[in-house]
Length: 124
Image 1 (cartoon, rainbow, N blue to C red):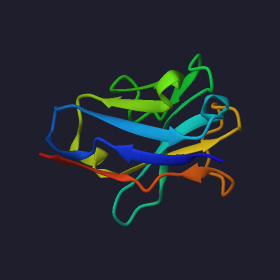
Image 2: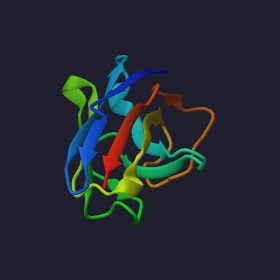
Image 3: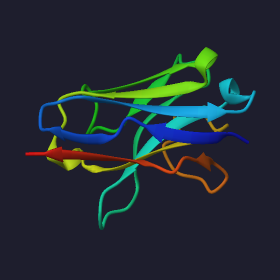
Image 4: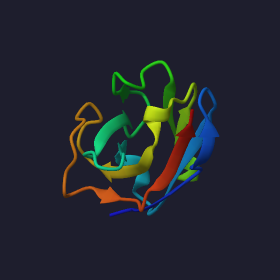
């Protein structure tokens, strides 16, 4: 089990950038795939990006491909989500989740450990 804390959200204009962080506690962090999800008001939570335990494999939703980059630093127990060319439709609460399924699996699971979320608001 890992405890996750997201940070880095905020208000940004369309076209701007933000970098989210997902900091984890626990000695086994490097054995977990990490996924970012987001949830906009009135919408279901959706997959954004994922990264394998080693960082060697990454996956993205089509809506963010080419604009967002996920990375991890296992020495710092942290995963990052660099978000560029932000659009108003990227406005949501962003959550990171850890579990041991392959990073290529983009669905949620109740067995994952979740952070509390960080708000991202993109103004037009």
